[in-house]
Amino acid sequence: MPHIIVTGAAGFIGSHTVDCLLNSGHTVTGLDNFRTGQRANLAAALTRPDFTFHECDVARPGVLAALAAARPVDAIIHLAALVSVPESIAQPALNHSLNIEATFHVAEAARLHRVPRVVFASSAAVYGEPVRLPVSESDEKNPISPYGAAKLASEAILLGHAAAYGFVVRCHRYFNVFGPRQDPASPYSGVISIFQRQYRESRPVTVYGDGCQTRDFISVHDVARANALATTASHSGIANICTGQGTSLLELASHFARRHPAAGSPIHAPARAGDILHSIGNPSEAQRTLGFRATVTVESGLAELGAE
Ligand code: UD1
Image (tube, rainbow, N blue to C red; front, side):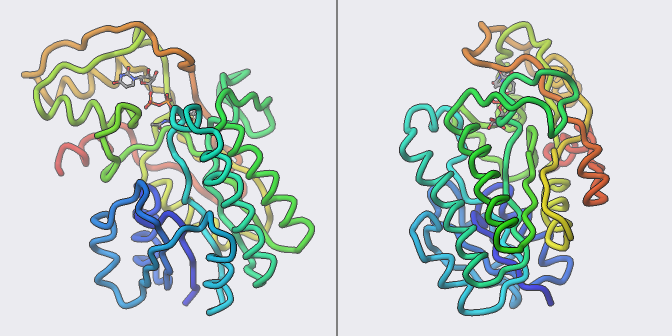
């Protein structure tokens, strides 16, 4: 059975990726330092004999390389990161360490221990405000945060190592990922997890700006499947992981309002500083190179959240 290391295994995307890999017959080693990940996210995985977990920090040199040396690895899926854009602005040095240096250690572990494939969690944040819609991988990259810049730099580090030392790297630019286990507690959480909690508690949601801004919301189940698919890719490359469909904030609020008719109308507040107006990805590269196509619609994804 293929053996896959997942960094950031206890996180939102990491834990779903672990579950997806285990359910498709892989042997998985999960790593997490619980900085933002939660042990509870791995509740199902921890009962499985084909899952091993290590509490450790992949930003420390040698940690990942030691694990890759101990047992042959078919792929590393590198999801461990500082995941908050505002936190990257408040703490650029921490962003550098957790998002750039940690990626370099992943690249080195792959080089030193002949790991044939690395899958990397990049972000639509590399585009900044997209120059056209839907945005494609070769379009201009204008990151507007240390987070977006670190993701772009990390892609380059991994792809350079891959070309020089002969392994395959797949960089996945995730768009707005939503689904179960996304922590709604932080004010910087994804809008769907925030709305879900507020509607469930019958509190009105806040829409920043006029609500006409659009996002390409993709289910974490689709993202996990894309990650698993990339562990057998034959060529390095970059792909948007998105649906190609935009949903406005007003449409999103009305989806929720249909499910929670007792909740009041949304409150409008000024647009957030630095908010991007429209973000929609072109999904054709992921389809061409991985055979990946998103299958979960926003409505069915919200139905799953409501059923929790
Ligand atoms: C998302 C990512 C970010 C990434 C960026 C790339 C999340 C949490 N953030 O930011 O990591 O860099 O895409 O383009 O996935 N909103 C409201 N009310 C709320 C909360 C949010 O109206 O209570 C609005 C925001 O103003 C924004 C939209 O909803 O216009 C989406 O916000 P959010 O989920 O935070 O994601 P992004 O800002 O797109």
